[in-house]
Amino acid sequence: MRPTVAASQTAYIGLGSNLEDPAVQIRKATWRLERLPQCDVTAVSSNYRSEPLGPVAQPDFVNAVAALETRISGRELLQVLQRIEADMGRVRSGERWGPRLIDLDLLILGDTLIAEEDLVVPHPGIPERNFVLLPLREIAPDLIIPGLGPLADIAVDQRKPRIERIA
Figure: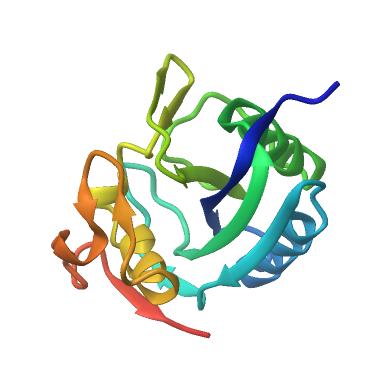
């Protein structure tokens, strides 16, 4: 039996790629999200090209955010996202901040707050990541982020790291 939550919640998923035609990887990941049981993709942002974070020299990323209505738990959703990454060819080498074929992050899950060793929701990097904030504002401008407040009140620097909307 699959664990489920009592009612549907809106989850926001961050998508990112900087290898093997990143825009195609984002489309493939979105296609897989659209086929998840007990989930319904309700919005997908434009793609944004962004400068990578961290010390590793690598190509720019393409990022987006998808909204989905889901009845599955945060833990199960994390497992599903990691399975999609693996199915698409992502290999977790342990290198942090490195290039990725696909990266799927559970950003927000309704009003849920989770603080576990391998799962923190809302994602703790949201306030510092313009490649999350800009696409999230595009699809959910009135969003209230649990523990952080209104999305519209979180300052975003569109110059650092460099970012541009591409499609």
